Length: 240
Image 1 (cartoon, rainbow, N blue to C red):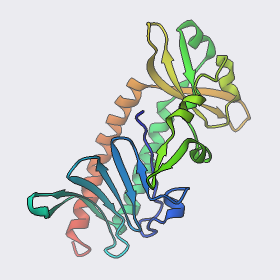
Image 2 (image 1 turned 60 degrees about the vertical axis):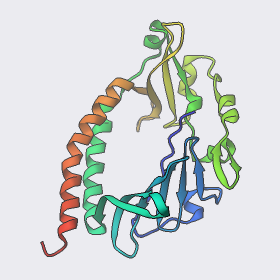
Image 3 (image 1 turned 45 degrees about the horizontal axis):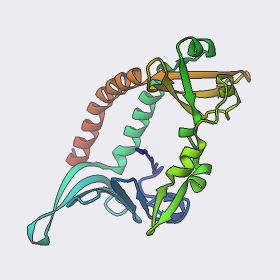
């Protein structure tokens, strides 16, 4: 089962400790085909069986966040290649700019989702594939010092939604996957969220997979020049 796990580092100098990186004190995540390792000031990502890994270093000493690739070559030597680097001083303004762009994206990304439209078009929903941090402990297990998703427990969560109207009973902000049942096999078409407006009204919103891919492509086109500019300014140093 392909699963994405996102780890957010709020401050570059904060480093990673076992209580914040992983709720269960484990410093490795097993994602099936890859291993993510959390150390004090860096994160390693490695495909199983590969002779290389990617490192994200938060730079508490160098005051620079960098991403580099490490390859093990013949003779046991390692080669390092810097893929991206940015100073802490440039990271803050860059992050604010990206967050602003992301806010605009999210405001335009989602559309209202109506139960009647879902029923007429044979659209089903599955909330069980979305879970918050509080469910991580229940849905994971530790094997060989690595934290792994327990697929059996995840499957147990599926198929619990008896009626589409039950989506309104989900907690505020809970997500769900959308599937089309017009063909023999269900086809993933998008995802949605149950939200509560400031006025207390319960609503459903959604985004198609195609729209999400298109909008994210446009988003990265907008932010890439900003990232490159910040990276180049970091390389030039403060006396530019």
